[in-house]
Image 1 (cartoon, one colour):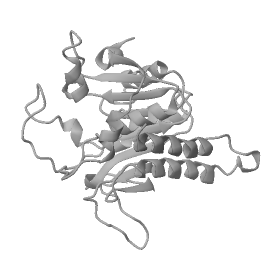
Image 2 (spheres, one colour; image 1 turned 180 degrees about the vertical axis):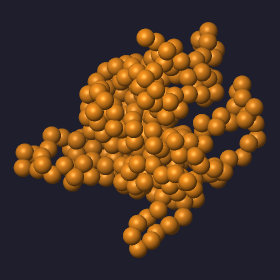
Image 3 (cartoon, one colour; image 1 turned 60 degrees about the vertical axis):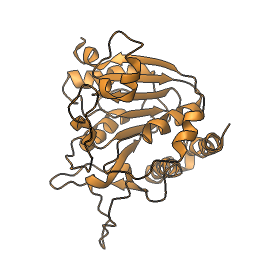
Length: 284
């Protein structure tokens, strides 16, 4: 076990404490209870970023002509300015590394559920149009240039309690079929601490994962969900960080995250399933 692996296990204890059932005397104090969960997730993420990244809680993200809903946790890249007024701190889309919605319980899959609220929050993030500073040396495999989807802000739903991963994916696809969501408005990651993790990409065949699977599978779906099922919370957090720290940056980086190599060294054991999103979007 390396030091990064050990730190994840120790940090998990804090996350588990904050996600415990609220004491009866404070169950009506939903604001502070919810805020404490958001702060804890923010602190966990900040632990694995370099000091030039900032993590902000409950913020709107602004572009030149748009704004998002209030987002629980926003990670700022080093290029983000200190844009502070006497009344607020302004978050600009071009300097956002990622957006995270913290939803303790996403086990209910209905129109008025917390999961649906989370999907709607992420939708507001994915709809933001921004200019990113990316040097185009070569195109992605099969693409002349990097897909425009990579200009969007990477987004996550982070939860403690969920239903089966496949049911969660099916519900998302139902939203797409009913045109409540577009295929580019789906969260990139959904963390379910009790079940595993869901990764989604509308340009899956162009990703490193998709390319690595080309030699193993007869065909690779253009859009895909990948589910990682596990009951081991440290493993789920490790996989989350592996994906999170590989999100495309809104500006050119001179150095990479130090902890990525440590995360790669850790052995993980998941039940992994690849789901063709295009087929699921049209399934009746």
